[in-house]
Length: 58
Image (cartoon, rainbow, N blue to C red):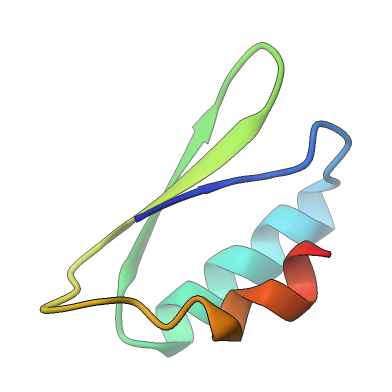
């Protein structure tokens, strides 16, 4: 799964997403691009529950 952050996401917001991912026992890989930051999720054995991330991404 790939979480694409809002263009104006702060370092604190990105860290919060990483912490949620890690709390699920998954691994977060932060990818900083020229326009946006994405967080790649690895380590899942099945579908990732996106509902855990929705509140912080709005």
